[in-house]
Length: 385
Ligand code: MUC
Ligand code: MG
Image (cartoon, rainbow, N blue to C red; front, side, top):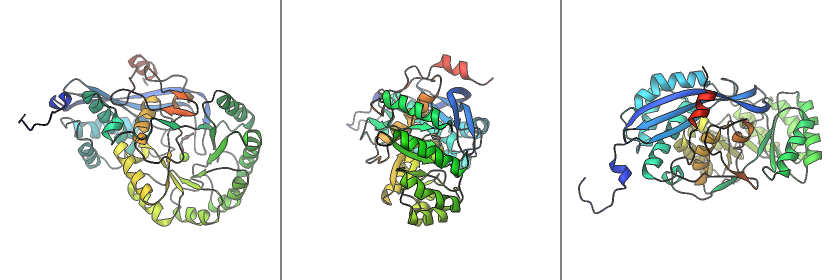
């Protein structure tokens, strides 16, 4: 190494080449059935990525799915196949201190496959952070916040059970905002359900709803004023992802802010939604944006357009949730907080020390890389045969 007068951190002088990338499908049961408009799950399926560098450092990442290829086009089976056949081979030999170059190589090797790419990029940041002894958040520009307000999702479809569940969360001071999944039932049944929830929890909790694209424009036009009257604070993806024009028309008439989810995967999508004036806020998710760098890119486009940021999830375990928290930690504003309750809806976690939930907030874990450690015993227990 030439004498530049600049001290090179010991980790950077080690061999940072990526030597192996392994992927494992796991299925972790949930504490209750979780119903969305397009699917319903009693177990969460993830692909866990383990990446190793020549210097011996290891990194982990997670690709989350929800009910097979129903929430988006990626299933765990497809994610694993594309990692093993295309994405991993494209990265072997690349230095881990080049995550942007890794992104370019992965984009050249496979179109979209954003959850698969996000899991690998997360593992690169983890391995690099562990090598340098710094948190992934520092590699992304440092920390503005070390804890984030976190909501809980009510999704059994049974309002009696949902009120009891919400009361438990309020009592334990874990969550005081609740996202209600609608669209699996008829619009009128959902409105009746929301009336009961608002009457029981109103004044003590904030309610938002997510229709997961279930309604057509006419239904949304009829239901949004009712939701506004009930005090619902935010309505997520009421109409199909393709129907940006409907979002624009609804937004012009609705007295409740609209949150873009399935209609924003890439920074180009974000730009189109912003230019059309189709949303008040956007849900940021690694599985949509292809990694921490992609998430921050989408956030930058939203920030430039004055669109609020919401920390979205796909029911990740503590591995995926930690990765999101590192990406969220450096955002200047995260107006809507986050929904990384995933680790709490699983009957078990995949790390040695799960994330800390306290006083309605989830904490950014301490330590190098992601700050969480894979429990290999758990990985084996939940691995699909
Ligand atoms: C979504 O569409 O937002 C996040 C929380 C939840 O219950 O479902 C997910 C996906
Ligand atoms: Mg959503």
